[in-house]
Length: 469
Image 1 (tube, helix red, strand yellow):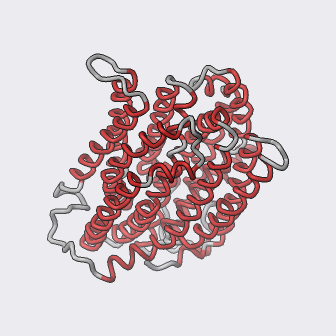
Image 2 (cartoon, rainbow, N blue to C red):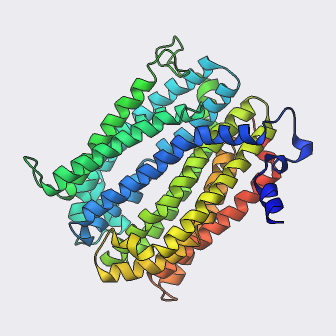
Image 3 (cartoon, rainbow, N blue to C red):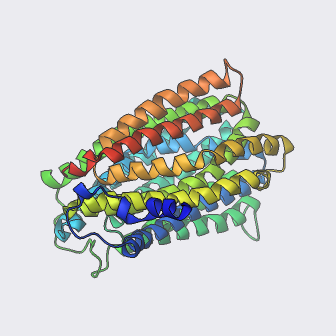
């Protein structure tokens, strides 16, 4: 009976309703192999970046919990400034994937070139704005007087790297659209290795390097961004590559090309606005609980990012394969590949559940030796363990919908769950109810399960397969 249940869950035979099958479908082995081939570099990239970010936090944490808070408080303001770039890249991936599926190389390169020009302009403007308005932005984010000076110093330096990071992300978004996820893996691995190496030298003042503390961590991040950009740029100057900036395809904007990208990106932008407002308000309320509480929160967020890393890796594969399948007029394959990524993520999430549950004190202890932080973080880790399955699944389902261009629905879901439910519930549980930091994390659980139920219902309905780009 157990074997039969496993077969019904993991066999491709049961993933697509018979009435939706439009042609020859890949067998079990081929279908899973296709997904894994695209997914593994994205998973490695996401998990590696998460682990390096965790190491980065550990190294900064060596200075003290005030340093963790100073760096952590900059996350949401940085993502707010990058919202337009991230939105643009959703459109880039979706449109390039469709053109790849249709075999139209010229259209794919036009999309990349025009998107790069937009990314270049946005990256420059946003970098300048971030440097000029660093202090008021971080004060509004909830930075306390004991960390504001460090936060501003760190934020202004990493804003220099935002320009290079913007271009790198756009190139990688296009490469993901054609299924070339290895480029993104390589650039991010290189960036983060450089980040950690120079963290070691510049934070602590090793050898002839000056001891710069938090400022050194920021410089190391910028150096990593610059290296990643040049590696990504090199990947689109290879004649053998489907995406090649040396082709005769015009750089001039045309309505059809940029319209297709912006049609998807505009809805993604709405989603990003809702995401960033919700996360910003959420982080601001947590920051008001005090420096130690926010440091604990930041540590737990780093650990939670590990499950997000796996989900995001599968999501990239799902988005690429869904877009390519719809471009090739095979919505049945789009459903199939979306379903396979769900099953694979289920297995990974189950492993992470036990790691988080039984290794909670050890994991938190890697970031801080303060007993107060370890004790409170260990309780939150139990909550994280029970969130893992919901988080990975909803991230993948959202990736499927974005790959199909159904970004309006994802935006509406984000508005309801992240911009409304999470902040309201956080305020209610943290303050009137008096649960403090635990209340903030209970709100995260509700948010994750809410998004899972809504996106799963949308995916099952299948209307997203009929969207035209």
